[in-house]
Length: 185
Image (cartoon, rainbow, N blue to C red):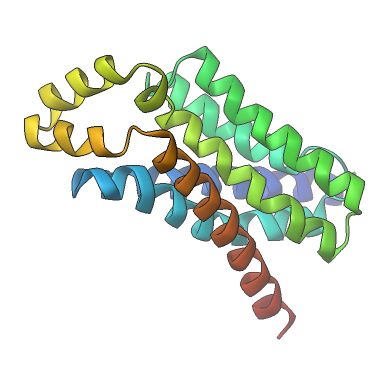
């Protein structure tokens, strides 16, 4: 029982690390709108891969990605960075990732194919750029400035959303593969 409890504590630590690294990446968004909408979620996908891989190799049951997504969603919700819908979408990405992992198997292939879906949940934090654009622009103009808000307008199109989704999936896949190979050495 002691070993099982210790393992869960370490996995919970990975979930907290995933939330911290994802949140830390968001600070790049202050540099430019492109860093907020494109670089931040892509970098979060890279930096989240080691936490996910470590936990997924030790927890062979449903719930690793769900736990990581839940911790991030709770942190952002408590900080009033997201609303309930955004938080639920983040958790949904974790659930879908876990479903893929279970369908593909708990071995390396299942882990590698399921991870890229998890960081898609981070896009729920940004979703109001596409669903409540005017509100988003106003908030950005007040918080950071009109030039920044104007830069966001260029990224509020569906092509930009599609681009970010594809980049997060591709980079997430590359990152989990690189981390997996590095972990074997």
